[in-house]
Image (cartoon, rainbow, N blue to C red; front, side, top):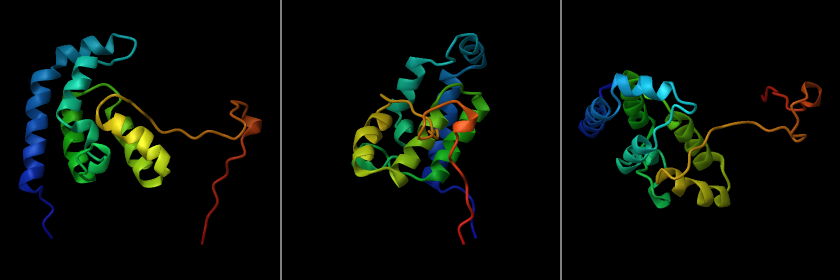
Length: 144
């Protein structure tokens, strides 16, 4: 089996490395980490313009429709650059919405995520919507 990246995947990885070397220098990362949000709107929108916020979003929802290998290639370069921000949480949420969301949820959230207009994360919410530990009803069970 050949586990090397394909030529298009290598091109994506190399372009991510080049982009982040220019736009996410260590000095800029340090500056961002001193802020309340560690977020840079200009950088976020530049990544959206590259199509990165739509990597795993299907084409019919405005994304590139690529897979987890492509996401991992870009994420590796983000790790190399110590990119701060909500990129991985947003794309994790997008992948979950695409696979487990309703038709309405996919229509409502995926296009804005792909366009870089919406940041997201994943969370569980109890029916009680309470922070009270005694109110937790969520249980994991083994299904045979």
